[in-house]
Length: 484
Image 1 (cartoon, rainbow, N blue to C red):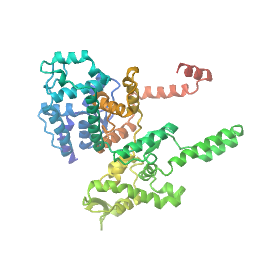
Image 2 (image 1 turned 90 degrees about the vertical axis):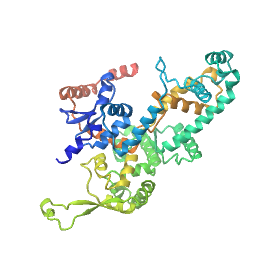
Image 3 (image 1 turned 90 degrees about the horizontal axis):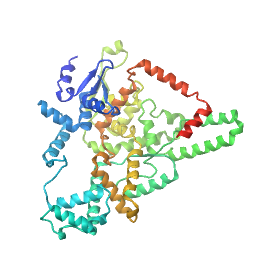
Image 4 (image 1 turned 135 degrees about the horizontal axis):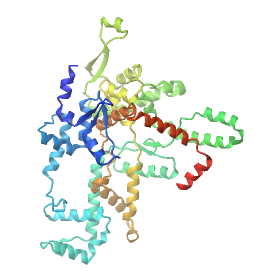
């Protein structure tokens, strides 16, 4: 194919991916290197149809420093526009990199402001009491280490407290720009209801739009039809009261999620469903669902710019191939198209991307630019358990028996700043969630779903073993429960 030479001339990409002949996929050499050192590390593999943009996105999103450094060593120029901000960030970090001491620690040149920042970093990151600054022994240690320092230069606890609050407010402003709040996935415990109300209030005070109801994804699966539960009552009349209680609870959950926009939008951006579900089950809400989709796209269009031309799929006239191929040839016209027109075109589009929602949006993100951006935000709605649980677990290291009087505002500031300082545990919910990184992750997920196991015999044996384990006796299950 004529595109192959251009594809493989992208040296800043293809030098860092190797082909797996058995899987017909490409693996990142940096991921492979990490996996060799740690078997639990995940290796990203991409299909042979993946574009260089997707592969390059993986490199700068996951291995920026190693990638740029190796390109520099090999004399490979990185010219892709979308990679320039990442390359510039790497260059800036290298220019500002402080000297390394013999211990390998970053040791900046002494300045008074730098001394104050390092002192606060120590207190925050190491869960020290603010009162440590009042210890005469600690102050003597600082005076001994720097002969130019005098006792009046060392701050007291009030100054440190104010400095922490100031640092926290600055960091929250950065997060407000960086973090576009989406949805929170949590279970249906009543304390989570209270948490969402307080979260919404806190974010709204910071002028971040957030709804305790509309931005909540409840961790409950509602795939069981109520009719099936009613049939169970006929089959097991002894348990009718229990089944009725279950149906009532499911109906309560359904009422909680029925009008939450994210659920409706997830249905509408699934190309194999679109409005079909509403037309079959909620005909009175078809118009409402379509208008919700249009209204949800307006912020994306504003971000894209009012004058940005949107591609439009049209049919070539007088095509002699229609009779031969049985369908018209499609081409793209670069012309302005309203949100209404884009939605209407999508709803009548009969293609479903081989039945795969991810594949559909990969293939049609240029044709439906506004819808594809919404799809990228809706489809990968994440759970929030891991980062939050880390914060909760770490909080006990700050709130010790000797520091039991920390006010809530200070506690919040200490935890957020602590995780911002500890890069290995960085409290950053947006890492890898920019649009390009999400597309790359979606493609990798799709590739893994279609990948056959390397050892098919062992895989079949594992499946058979799994079937056997499902037939454990009641005694076996009781033993497992006791062990847990």
